[in-house]
Image 1 (cartoon, rainbow, N blue to C red):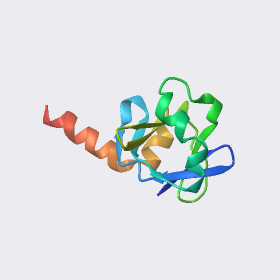
Image 2 (image 1 turned 45 degrees about the vertical axis):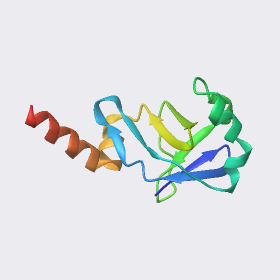
Image 3 (image 1 turned 90 degrees about the vertical axis):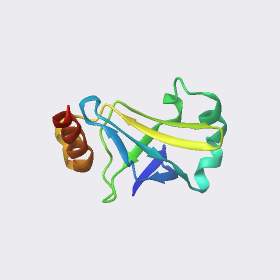
Image 4 (image 1 turned 180 degrees about the horizontal axis):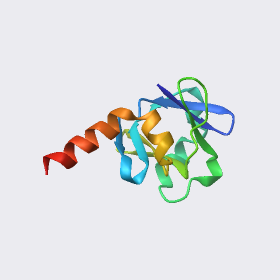
Length: 109
């Protein structure tokens, strides 16, 4: 389980169960924590630029994932977190299952 932060505040978690390895993107269902209420209105209304929320993601071992950006998108009762621009070596280490699924789909073509 990955932890999602806004600044130093834990706002939720996610398994980041989906991914796009060539794009360096991991995403998944967002499970809100108590801190989410402070940013929820922004996540519902602003799907363009959430840089003011200072979002980050930590691995299960507590290390911050280096990436280009993080967004939390809430619409129609569903909440998704997206981690964008994760570098290749780190992506493969963090999400080997995404890489395997992608490689299998390429070989099927």
